[in-house]
Image 1: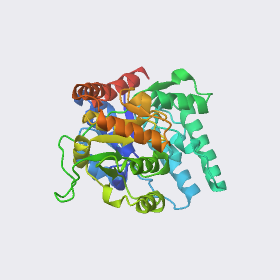
Image 2 (image 1 turned 45 degrees about the vertical axis):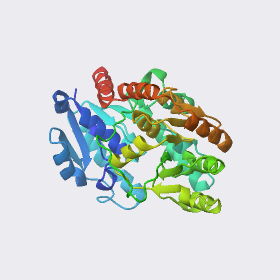
Image 3 (image 1 turned 45 degrees about the horizontal axis):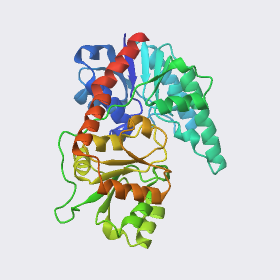
Image 4 (image 1 turned 30 degrees about the vertical axis):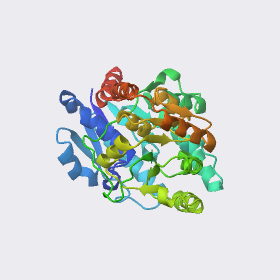
Length: 377
């Protein structure tokens, strides 16, 4: 068994993107005896990084990223398909493992058996407003159809994602889809992101992208309802977006919440761990989740968690947290937050949840599941 790991989506500016981290965790946890069976397919500009971080792995270069091919989209895709097929077919490997999605050249048929990962289908589930959006949605729908058709095995990262695939693509055989949950890994140390003068004594915590499908506006509305009943601050962690500037910031300014809300971004993993460990409560009001790392990370740090029941969250959090619904009901969220602050899960219960998650989402378990799958292929 020789596996070619597609890492062509990982360029130097995407080393900390979620899909990059997904692949790195698998490679980092791979037993030393198995590494000789894996070859990494990397963009040319990642060669120095790969030599330093993964000297035990063989690698092949993919010289067809945007920096090397035509800027014209159709010509670029045609060039990438030609180069990709040639390199993959001549790699000497048996299995092509693709953990990224929506890269047009990866949907093609190759001589290798393909194992592909579907993280979520949100790009085909949103209702586009413009014609260009409708065209993009259709093209994405067709891409996934071809991506899965040419695969030997489709890996879904949760039972929810597996059911989503079967719902939107009924032609895919159920036995072709295997569920392998993501691994969840925390930094070994915790470092405060606050200056001593700015550290809040008590705070609620939100860590996620500041986009509509993560539903942070409902959290702000719930906090507005609670602000006179609790003394806590609200810490929001997420990169500044147009939604933050145009919707969230005006809302908190209109309701005089600036002094109670701290917005942080570009934090290191050690700083995130500190926030999880010191928060009184973690909140995830998300509307779209194929997996949902952050409530699991918070629970691993034994922080009480209030969670929506959307999509994969009840499955991946193993129905062990505090839940509220419907997700866009600010009053229901405010009531659940207040009740949980006043009567949080016991330390023993939080320790039990953390131990369960530690076992279920260990890197070693994820890697062993993939090794078993590759050998069966």
